Amino acid sequence: MTCELWRDQIGGYVDGELAASHDDEVSKHLKQCGECTLYAANEIHLKRAVSHAGKRYQPSAELRANVLKSIGASKSSRPWFALAVAAAVLVIAVAVFAMLVSRADMGREIADVHLSTIASANPVDVVSTDMHTVKPWFQGKLPFTFNLPELGGSPFTLVGGRVVYVRSTPMALLVFQYKLHKISMLIGPENILGASGDVGGGFHAVSWTKNGYRYVTVGEASADSLRDLSERMRTVAQ
Amino acid sequence: MFRRERDPEFEALAVPLFEPLYNFAYWLAQNRDEAEELVQETFAKSLHGFGSFQRGTNFKAWMFRILRNTFLTSRTGLRSAPTVDVDDPALEVVITDVRDNPETHLMQVRDREAIERALEQLPLPFREVILLCDVEEMKYQEIAETLSIPIGTVMSRLARGRRMMRSLLGDDTGVRRKVRS
Image 1: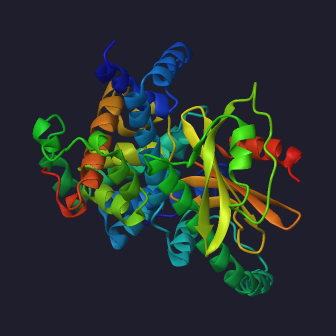
Image 2 (image 1 turned 180 degrees about the horizontal axis):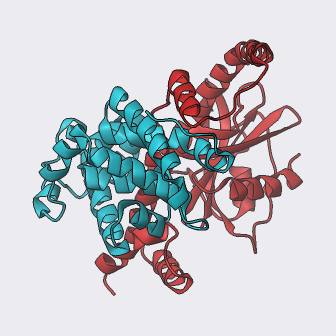
């Protein structure tokens, strides 16, 4: 089958609509064909970006009230209680707002690092699947060290690493392959790094800390797979 | 708007769809006032017709279908529907193949505003099928039920709509350019 015909099926593959047997066939082809893999990656990117950007419009509270009234939906019989709850929520929201803004900025920076990595023709400076090659490469380049887990038999493959600067601070960037996805892992001082959940751009991030350093795993792969990789890293972290 | 007695079953099923319906209505009408009218009318019609809703079938698809049909019979809907021949290959005349330049494509995809503008410019039949698939995460079968079209048509519109999106995003000026319709 030509790549053109395979690509006709990639939309269904990305949407999770192919029958299991077809899904396996497409997966096999993608493992062998770089161009179709890139095409599929672009499709996944577009789908995720549309999924975020498409949730654009929020209805007003007035419209909600009107609609609920029109269908006779029940309302609280204690409006003052509801107001008090709303006020308390507002106070809490204001209190955490500054923290969220700061974390959101960092989340965007982390997403940018990941995006520039996967979009680059040379995403890593040390290219190796061998942790005994990648880890020593960072010696002398960073003011800290870290351990890497054995990934044999896991769905993850180490691609390599490089040094990146986030807010003028050097950090380790490790790149892993998971199925069609590239996953980035940033390791740096806890007081600089900090992100989890959605970092924008359709990416997820999972983060955790140990001994003053934060580990952030980011990618478009599912949050479960990011947690899986993080857990493997956590077990060997110093 | 008419009002009926409260129906707890309808309320439990319909109220969680309020925000998704409004979002979809706004994308269809591209106007706040019309989107608000569409949502209010949809809730009124669906409550009125809830007795005819077949239990065990897809309530979400049913509600979205009512909203879309309401839109299509509105002034804006009537204006937009006949202007697009979805089988016209000229709809994709602006497409450039961005697979030759994936980096540019990736960088633009992250720009939320560019995505929003590209969605706005898609002709309605492609915009609605992409929104239902990617934003509402409906399966092809649900989309087919919502839009009353065959699954094959859902698939072909998705493929063509995404090609148009890539075209609009892959071109530096594409986000400001209208897809011919």
